[in-house]
Length: 236
Image (cartoon, rainbow, N blue to C red; front, side, top):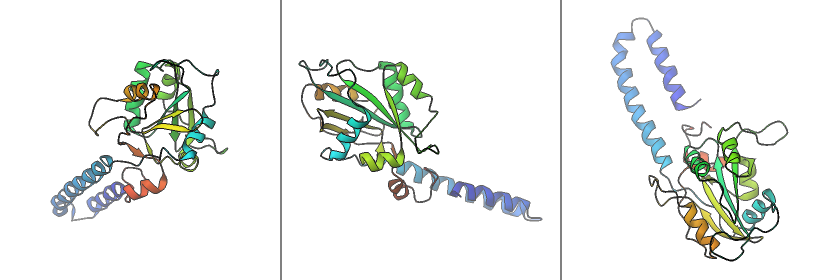
């Protein structure tokens, strides 16, 4: 039971007690106001926290992504920076994350870039009896229509196989195992400008862009519990 559910239960019990409804109304309303401020501050603080990115030097990241997204149609000609390059661009999004939804919407509007293999990995808590992640996130069909191959993976699998703990995450891999970029999309939490196109262009020119911070949601269970011990944001 989350703290919000406990608050609702306590109020319901109080108002049902005979003879105390009127005398407790002011106290209950005051307590509710205080707890609401605490909950909002708690949730906002967790949302503003910079989240960890996987290490670009971690071989599990590049190899795991290459296994999820094998070459499609052989090498593609470089469309961003001249000269052929073998780039794999993966947007890792979480179907419960509002910041991921924002990135997904931006991808839908611009469509997949030419000259690179640009994919979307959707992380989901919804895992079927067969162990395969499944989600009815509406953005998936729209992303596919915009030209993005989409793969879904359970949160536990993402943590175990790719060592990814938080999203939205952009990963750019060159060749079989060289990670040119693993990080976020913006300089700050409230920055409206997603910089994925700039980052892809720099990688296409052979540079390794400086990683931006990740502002969004934790996907790894251990990190969720660390950031949200009361289970307010993640409901655990």
